[in-house]
Length: 388
Ligand SMILES: Cc1cc2nc3c(=O)[nH]c(=O)nc-3n(C[C@H](O)[C@H](O)[C@H](O)COP(=O)(O)OP(=O)(O)OC[C@H]3O[C@@H](n4cnc5c(N)ncnc54)[C@H](O)[C@@H]3O)c2cc1C
Image 1 (tube, rainbow, N blue to C red):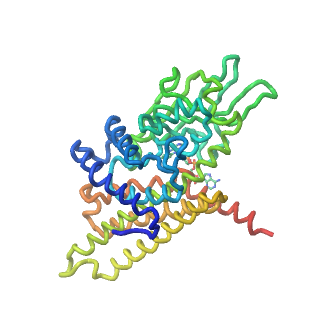
Image 2: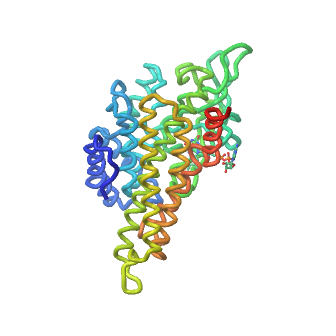
Image 3: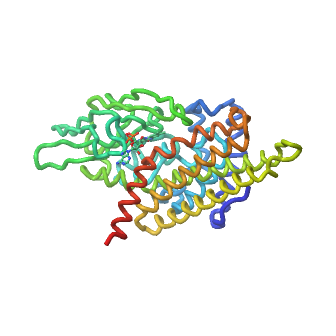
């Protein structure tokens, strides 16, 4: 199905589509990969490195660090394209949760050489470790501690649900620095190699839709130095929130892609499925579902494109990012629900891929901040803007 009127990115969208359909999906087929198993690390690396050769990997990273300097809008358009295809390598084609992202631009030159360069090459992956068992929506309740001593910092604590945690070569870990009275302190981001003594991949989660991608990390007196501090001591919280704002829009773009898939499959099925001597698409009850899915999808696409363009212009997107993530994550859940309804019983069977979509999309109203927290953000911004 031909999609969204953003003509500038058409060649890139076609390049993503071509790569997925001619190389990634055949690779998946040749290796008998199924959705409920994370692809082997070697194949994931192969997909990333090839995407990099094609200029598709982390394309929105600046040219000075090896990216293509594509706008964030362009990145979101490519995310929508990627997720409209059914591939287990969805984390690797553009560089998803484990790939390079803007938070790494806080890295200084030695950090860029050590951590960012191999990440940009597709050779390594990373993860963003903020949430803890006691600090989810309330990220200010972090318990992870980096205690200052003569040799640097000693990191202790754990991170509860970390995407790509079981696979990442290094993590961006948020912890509260505790030093002598008067010294710099507060929430700080650290770049921590998974091979550092005391860094533990504590547990792999069995998670709805994305099984094998999430895990718990633990830090048992991990020795760190100044070279591990990303940005400044005490600057971690605004850094995390700034990154999450953009990532909410990228997440919304993912949901739009998945909703496109759900709609396309539902329309095709409705056209061919015969009941009472006619295609079910001829029944108004089915037409109304498809019409609502298409209308909400269109709204989601526009929200993603508009908010991404705002971010490219350097505008404050806290409210619009929250609105876009809220709307799109709930929209794709409605689309998945209706897609199963249109398919009837067969929609519940693994062979259609629809039940997989249904399982996959549920997490979107939770990660990057729950729907409730998006509404809290929206209302907070509204009151600042509109209250007398
Ligand atoms: C698949 C998946 C991947 C994830 N990946 C990562 C990752 O890579 N890195 C990372 O750091 N974290 C990650 N997370 C964690 C995620 O960010 C948290 O789960 C999320 O922020 C919610 O926190 P919580 O689970 O502790 O829920 P809680 O904060 O305990 O919330 C429980 C319920 O209470 C509601 N609630 C809480 N506070 C308020 C309030 N003030 N007003 C109204 N309602 C409220 C919530 O909306 C929710 O309905 C991931 C989670 C999932 C499911």
